[in-house]
Image 1 (cartoon, rainbow, N blue to C red):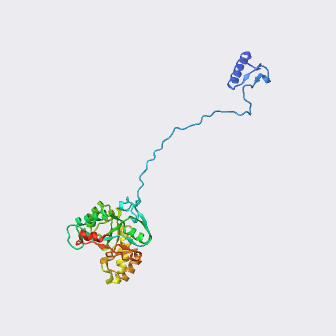
Image 2: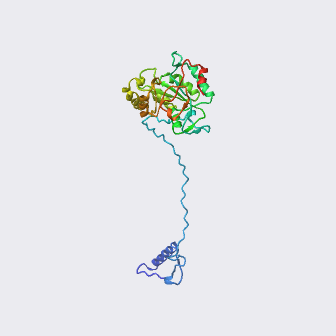
Image 3: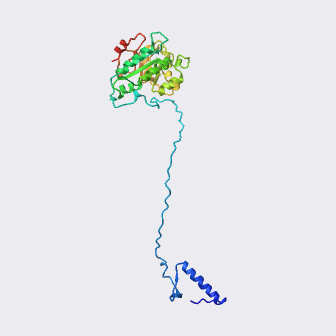
Length: 321
């Protein structure tokens, strides 16, 4: 191949030839004799030929994500408690295979009534701690399981799952020994109870349940109802019925932070006027009696068996079916 150059002579031509040859080798071309201009593209792929390129995919190293659960602040609820407590269910309220659905209608379940449990007082309405523990032991040995009063209502009215031998324990007035004396004994046997509070007694001294104690009982699965505003005999003055009945519910729900759906008649006394007032505000009314049978017609005067200081263990056993 001859490279013509106006200047530089043969040495420049040689240099140019060397550069051309090097460029051809880098580009994959070869210089062959003959052909168009002496340069052949035999070693290069056709212009339109598909070029196959082996690509090694990028595989990232495995990454392990560790999710650390952050503690989400608990939203303070209003009300503070729901009828179905957020605490771990107590043994007596946890349905097991032994529980069966009870259809709506008649239900046999003793509802017991206590006022005081302590060893200091000796009045008619005070049961000693020894007697109380012995009575709870009898109930446990006979296979009774405590249920909240709300569940008894639902079973009678609508039908609900129940243990084989349901039982309701209630305390009237909200005395502090319910917490200090009765509560530890009930815990021994896995029992809970319902307490009926007199609104005007609350925060009025050390003889009545404190707000903190009530909160603890609620968290443990206990329920609370109204025992009126001032514990007066309601049949004596109808002009105060709204105050004693309806207002007591509103005041207690504000105080407790939970629904209050049942009312215990002070002294167990009521008539048709009082009962009508209770019907307009509550889902049930509790009175006194000796029967353990409850029906849809008796929901506004549920029979409660009162246990007094004079109730011997033999008497107690006879009261319980």
